Image (cartoon, rainbow, N blue to C red):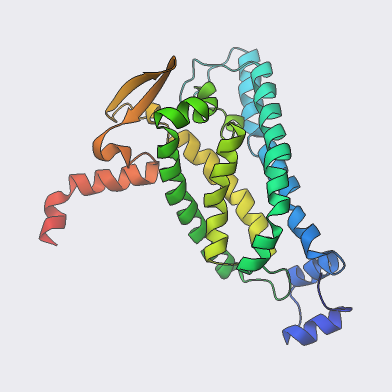
Length: 273
């Protein structure tokens, strides 16, 4: 809750006139407790999960009904029926509400402890962009190593195999996973704001950007989408696990793969430098 009764008091505290964004934030949050502002994380996360994959899902269902090709899909021959979309969405939304929601609400003391603020002034666009960039890097790095651990035999059999039930790309399947995996992957998402504290509005933006990066990475990090990556297959409890070998195992994401290919193709030039 902002400690200002009027806009004039807020401007006096800031030392300048409020921007339109700050004025809008003042009108919205002046009488809302900080805990309630933090509770917005749950509906925002659910809203982004609902709306972000919706256009491509509708496109796939429409083309499936008309028997049209799906050139945008990595596996155009696989067409999910409407029941598959509904089952995936309902299962993930249930986990977000029943598992992630309570953890989000209970983690408010930690959020306050690391310095997440709700007051004025709002961060600048440059500050926000820099913070979100740091969060993306931290989340991608930690998420990569956690993903590798989830592909060990025990973790795959007990936790991660749920995520691989949908073997063809589908937006709603990006966060489709065992409840324990979603909670585990929440640690990399929170690590960035814990290292570089930010404003609550940046947290809301990070939830949206973080989900989109999760969705994109989920499509690009499955080694089965890279036919030129050397792999070995292992059977664990009836499930085939594809494991990248040697240096390609690190180059799972598109960005890492491009960097590795550039370095590999320019080893002589880089050695001269």
